[in-house]
Image (cartoon, rainbow, N blue to C red; front, side, top):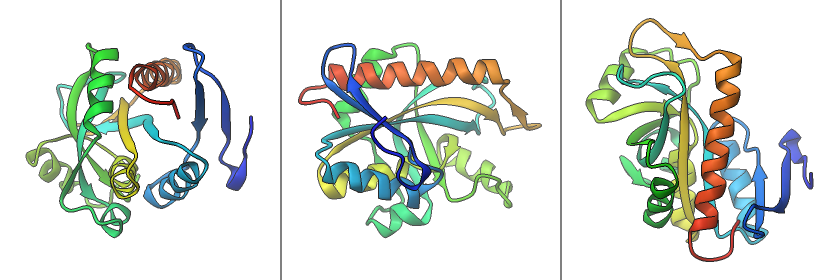
Length: 198
């Protein structure tokens, strides 16, 4: 462990391929994630992959299913403050690397929101109609900051909640397994992508 600034733990060491890998908690939401990524860039990060969870807006997605994010709909304030428009793409190189490392995962558009507990749940249907298959809170911000600073950012998520009908939450064992799966995919994709790992 090399860092616990702001209560957000970070670890650096050698990945399976022998390259340097940092795993850093960002906290919840775009503002916190933007601070962390900005500081990692200042320390020399050249690529980043968000690994985390999302709520499914699409009833075809099951708890524990994995999503490689191709683009995010920007329904948050931070990505917009960083210059994003209605949507922002993941880095194409990291997207391709994530897809190679997880061919069984669904590639999807997601939406990034500022709220964990939505007060306007009718928005779920609107977002799904716009093509979002899941909702989370950080990807749009990280994609926008990566584009602004010239670093590659990708994202792989596990479905932890089903929001398209009666709300359903993943159990602790499956959440642990899903977290491990996205972490391994993220590390493998960074290792497979060209350039120094970050």
